[in-house]
Image (cartoon, rainbow, N blue to C red; front, side, top):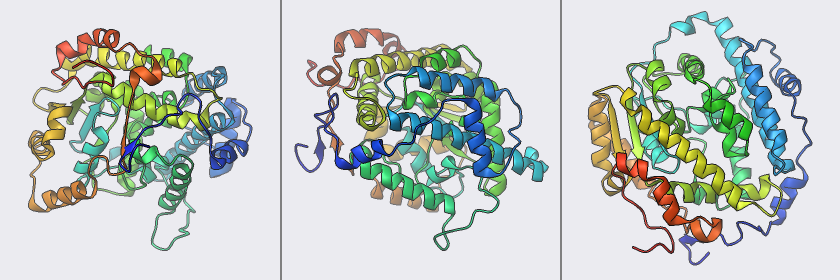
Length: 423
């Protein structure tokens, strides 16, 4: 660190692990990346057996094989990926059980959702949390995305607190104790809104595994398959969550919506879709710095920062090429492109534009709730990380700008100067 508000992570490639980090790695349980091992653990955790349509098994097998093929994953990284698979399989069991007990859930209407798409690190999290401050809109906080359907026999351990909230608060508290700089890059408070692609996790799709591993085989499979069925599955889970707790007009966000405009519009034909745009170089340096910091406990050391950079440069290029290609699939009159620099300069004006597009009145009560959120969550409240895409990751800034020229040509994003780049 250089001062109280500026954070420079100087040991990204060769981390100096704390005793807590060493302990977390040492206590990671060994796991076997096999489909039946995941499903058996999910059955044991839930007491349920019906996973619904069996096609997910093929995708789960590809996930697990890709994790096994990622030789850079360390013990804690492997245990984490296996644990996520068990969590998603458990959620799938609970979704099927809830539908069996309440078949009317299929008739629940999801009313004109507001859906935010945008690159990771482009303001989507902040924007969705601002809109979620309006109590007329339903959103999915982190504690609910971690466990979208409660266990039938789940009992509170803290009076008046949903046990899922309690578990999430404790789990992420431990995570942030191990990685104390993480909130400065991406806060994971239990009540902050998380990404709706978590709902597709129970169908073992989306780009979720890519954030915590290098699953090349899954990336290829995902890119080659239409995601419409998995968006439909996500909506199935959304109906179940609405049945459990309304209202039924949602505000949601996820970056991979940018590469799935067709499936998104087909699944939510009455949605208002907001697309945020930011300089992809700023996105990449922020995202891979955050991932590299977390990788000190997930992967074997020293870290291969060039591989990490290459993976995500390729991945962001895939995402943005699909965005440019399919932008015309967005509904006319119900989609809005927001530029990051305009959003940062005048958030209230942007919010007003979103409300107008969604045909939702910005009432005094809603505006007061939004103002309270903005006051409590200024940008950089946990400190400002200093990024160095060229110095830390060996990236040629000029060549990367040329590579993304297709995106600069399509959307007038403001180019953000990288460390060492000439003005």
